Length: 433
Ligand SMILES: *Cc1c(COP(=O)(O)O)cnc(C)c1O
Image (cartoon, rainbow, N blue to C red; front, side):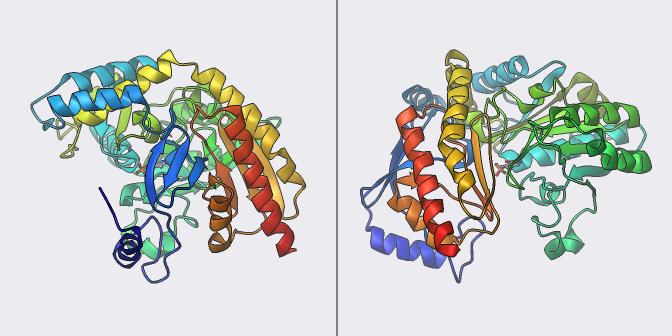
């Protein structure tokens, strides 16, 4: 494809929505020509070291040859076929792998289009489950403040009401219940008071609650906060006591990002329903999966509808499933644990100097996630060109300047990435004084 980038960018600005942007005052976008390994190549020839892994997903780097080969093979065989009444090796193999990788007794797999859809599926499973058990009144959800679960309506209704701007959609969103966000940090001493508000809510409302949905250990887009594993163990205990399903949204944390294959493992907790997405295909294509137990699946299937009421057009897309299997092959054959530990050490070392900058509230690292939290939101129009100029791709969000690099990033690139973050932050924060 040969493109006149000047006119392409003009067209882009005038006609194409980007995530969470204005059509009248769009923030700048950079044109990408290609990407490989941990580098994004811009149309103007500059190369950026990628700190974002395209929002948690590109864990093996861009264009890994093994995944590309699997995709080529699958495209030539069959890119897509409907999943109603038909099945195929990529879906079967992927489901086998997911059942084997995730803790027992999660053994039923629903393949869907994206993270948000996997959350929709999970919420519907919880509602159908309680209907089938003769408790149709248990249809509301409990969620955590600072949580993020996606942009579709069902998912949006369980996102943090403030950052998710519930007031804009008040009349269109299901009114769910929200517990305060966990305060006790991952590395802090456990404070039993941290779970009290949630326990009170569950006790008061369990008759109308189908499930609690949360991001285990790492609250992502809603604040990049790392909370205490004991909190999750207490949630599991309370769910069992009051009869709520536990939905773990591991769309961001799944596949090693937090230092464990799944973040629930930090607490030794098994959810009733597990949502996966993002890194599932190694960032090559969109795909989601919702896993549940035989108990939940059989109960739903014995209910009034006699089936689970969901089935998207591109369900179980063979190309996406084959891509996911290739990504899981790499993950399982590779030494992701050592790489994530090395990244954790590199991020901790590299970002530490940011803690001394004026206007920095906190610097924290867990697994291959590094966060610099500021006192004030960044000025995107000012800071983005500075990162690009420094040769890195970092895209802050509000007061959070964070990275979750591909696991394959070597120490030299790690040092360049964190060094550029500290330098750019130093320049903008010192000037703001
Ligand atoms: C990204 C994300 C989602 C939504 O996934 P999409 O693929 O963007 O729909 C849901 N939950 C969490 C925790 C996420 O990080």
